Every structure is written in structure tokens, then in C-alpha cells.
Length: 153
Figure 1 (cartoon, rainbow, N blue to C red):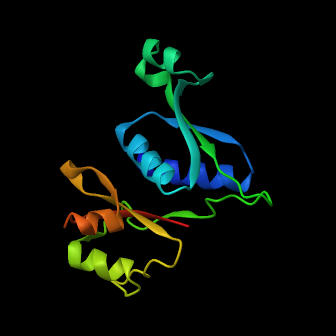
Figure 2 (tube, helix red, strand yellow; figure 1 turned 180 degrees about the vertical axis):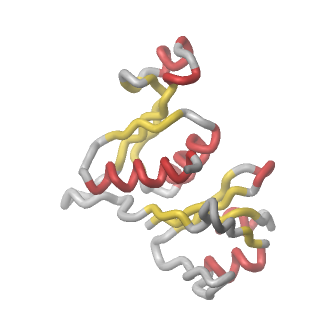
């Protein structure tokens, strides 16, 4: 299972269990996806740490295997999670790569490559290879194409 798939499952399960924070392996991909979620208001905070807990100082001193990203989840006043659903669009068995025109259709309510379009309040996360990870609308602005990895609502 790809690491971004593990991140999706971990965050969704933590939100359903009403956990305040969750630890995920510290990778560039996980940090990029967490940054997108933070920027769009789905999570509260991201802190570097180790298996024991969030601590940027210990993160620097620890070995690569014990480094973790601690993601603080966000909840509404009625205790419902802001991140309600995070699901994979592209899977290892079926990679879903879209060019900028297909991404535009996907983000504006029209089907692209037999994928249900994004709905109101939902974001798409795109892996644009060497150009990095982007939210689908930001990728469109930059005329990038890439693998549509996940959708978040």
C-alpha cells in the first residue's frame, strides 16, 4: 500500500474515532499532503516529532525510522470532524493521470475519465511529479497535469 494511502486511512479513522491528533510516518509526500489539508482548513496543525510524541527538537536527533508527523485534527463546535471523508481516487491497480483540461472538468462538476466530479466543499489532491503536490484548483492555475490521488471533504 502506498504511503499516501496509509495517510488517508489513518486520518479518516482518527477523525471517526474523534482523536485529537494522529501520528503518521514523516515523508516528503505526507508532509506535502498535510500542508495542503492545513492550508484548506481540514486539519488544525502539523508538528514534527518521534514515536513518543510531537517534539521538533527530538525529530532532528532521531533516526529516520522513528520520525513522525503529528497531525492535529480539527472539529466543529458540535464535535463533528471537519475532515469527514478522505478517499483515494487513484489506486495502485489503476493510476488516474489527468491533464489540465481533464482536471478542469473534474473540478467544475463534470465527469473526467469516469470519475465522479468534485462537489462543493470538496478538494482534490494531485501529485504533479517533479512539480510537487497540489490541490486540483492550484494545479489548474499552473497548467499542471498529474495523478489525482485523493479527494477530501
